[in-house]
Length: 91
Image (cartoon, rainbow, N blue to C red; front, side, top):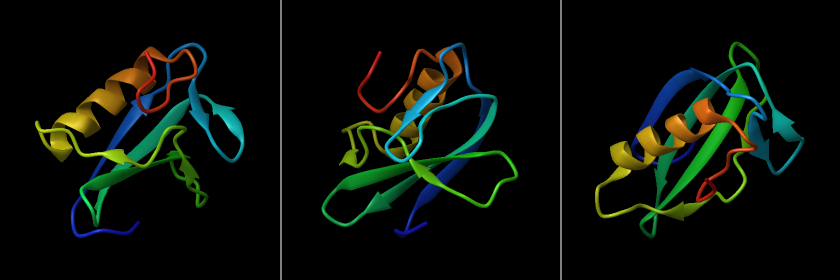
């Protein structure tokens, strides 16, 4: 992961999983990392917990919201937990 600041959490994806750019929907136990990049943006990556490969969560990178990186990370984790092909900025 790149950036000076990053947050990582584990979540079980809800029905319909999380949408990635590289492989489409992934499901099950996932690890999500939200990393601050230069220019006020954040990149969200997701992997099957314990795997080596990381995938880009669809919609990433995104601007860091006024509430900060932690709020964005919490929102992403919540979205993945709900499932439904979750991505950044998707219900």
